Amino acid sequence: MNNHVILGTGPLAQAIQRELTRRGKIVKMVNRSGKRPADVPATVEIVASDVVYDADKVRVVTSGATVVYQCAQPEYVEWVEKFPPLMKSVLEGLTGSGAKFIIGDNLYMYGDTNGQPIHEGLPYEQHTRKGKVRGEVAQMALDAHKAGKVRVAIGRGSDFYGPGVLDSLTGERAILPALEGKAAQLAGNLDLPHTLTYVEDFGKALVILGERDEALGQAWHVPNPPTISQRQWMTLVFEEIGLPPKMSGMGKLMMTIGGLFIPAAREIVEMMYEFEKAYIVDHGKFMRAFGQAFGEPTPHREAVKRTVAWYRAYAAQHAKAESRTATAIA
Image (cartoon, rainbow, N blue to C red; front, side, top):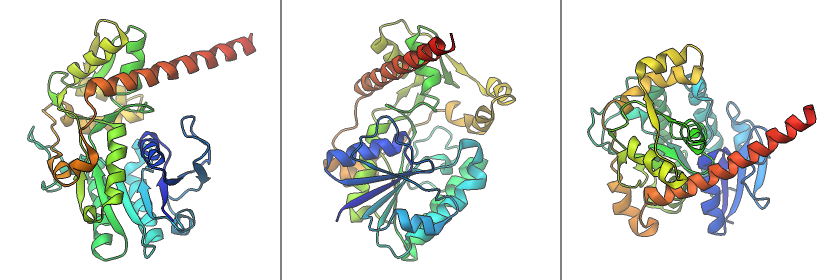
């Protein structure tokens, strides 16, 4: 049996689910509540289980799995405290199962590369709290692979956007205001090159890593469209919407002030180096190994078109919900 279990039901988990479903795979998704996200079809099993501290629960929900995808993560403000025990419990629960463990990761562990392209050969030189914890959990997983406990591969994406991606610097604070003709809120210097990952490409890349044994024991940067600036990307969004571009970039000072009231903004402050220098990701290793299977990354214009369409539908649904609530109150 070719069963695929996805830990998490967020945007990346759903992108993996869509790719697996297109390939005719049996898919099960796991979250704490057991609630089915609106965009997940009824053919996909949803299981309620909190795997953060319980390896036994991991064993239960992943029993019989061929591939397990790690997309579950604590709240952004809880990474330092909860990410290590989460990874520890998942690795312990998968030990000896024979399932491949494919991890959706980011690039924080490399630290500030001073504008130089980020590739997999770089050392972990993280200098931030969240960079250190991402490096710690990645190394924990690779060590488990080397010890023969779990078969691991890691796929790393940059800041990603796309259908369902709300809580992101290229998410609802940028696109929802743009749909209303307001200024989009982005971060840092808008005119520097900044690699962005399209979430559907991220999901597809992780599925490919799960198919290929030669991917195991390594980290891979997932494919991205050619790097452009945030301003260029946001201009594509406004062009798709049909409005003149209006945007601003919050600097470190403004993010610090915002952090006095918004915990998530406070956590972003230490990561602002990503938006104050060129941030360019090299995915050549993945393309050399798996490019034929993957094809070409989705061009930003096409990815933006799909993203704006999703946001339009999302905004319309929420407008209807708010209208119904107002009518009920009245």
